[in-house]
Image 1 (spheres, one colour):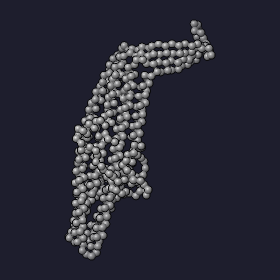
Image 2 (cartoon, rainbow, N blue to C red):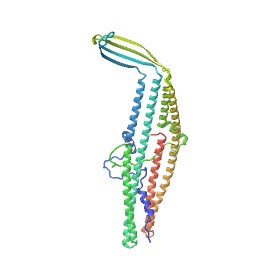
Image 3 (cartoon, rainbow, N blue to C red):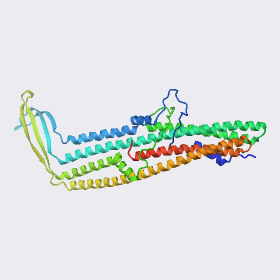
Image 4 (cartoon, rainbow, N blue to C red):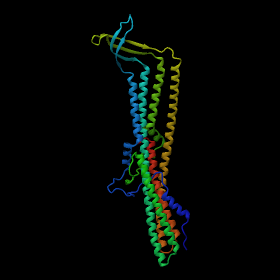
Length: 433
């Protein structure tokens, strides 16, 4: 006597095929209709496309250029300055001023000789520009990680389409088998109804899997920063081990602190804030400028007399109401905050490394286990199919075996993706491109 497959098992089959994974791995061949001459998208090409097109990177690069321009503006305060002037005045005033028209031309030049504040401001601007450049590197690393994750997700969705197609092919073969048995009277009509329902569920699962693949490819396009069709194949995926993924945590932390752009950016920000603190204290120091002027003046443009002069200008603020001291206190407080942020960053990097390396270990063990499960599930299906064909097994036994294969195949796809994604995250945590 045969029984219909329980609803819970059918639900597990549908969930295994239609639930989208966050990220995943690929199958060798393209699973969607694409242009005949379309070149498969490799992971390396996806990353290169993102580096050329991602708006986040364009914004980060523009920020770096702006910071470099601010550094040039600050440096200008240390270089010679020259100004030209000219004038034409008409006066009808009474004596002793002689009424009439006066022409004047002149050039004034100055060179700072002593300006501690200007030097400190230039130093702060240079350090800020370096910090922005390191922040650009950090943005690049995040974009690369996002693209890798998106590419793995699309690859996993492609593998799940393969799983759904394999399941549908098995359901088609089983349906033909059951039809033949029912025609000769060796199996009841209920087996045929159940086989048709199982095939219909497999079709629904395949539609869901293909939709998930299209969605994943759209998300990959967004990660690459491109607007276009998602009708392209993906290249076969490779998942080599990450060099040093089994290294001790202390060695990983040392490598990460030396390579992570966030650490360098934080160091440059602290340098900039130290220079800002020096700028604040320089308010107590005098400034000394060398000045010179060459000019011409007269009542007629063609008969102007020449004049010139040069000298030194000393400026020293003797009392400004405590403003300099307050500015220095503010700068010191900001520097203390940056020191604390640096400590937080180092702690977060260590935690990130701990989590990533543990995720890699767990994913490797999970992949090994799911591979064994899949092998045994396929063997179980083979035996169940043989028993059913011989009239020894039930339709429920065969359906259970098919559900087990589908579930195990989906789990194996997820395990491969999880390992690849964990390695990508560990590489990011280590500061590797």
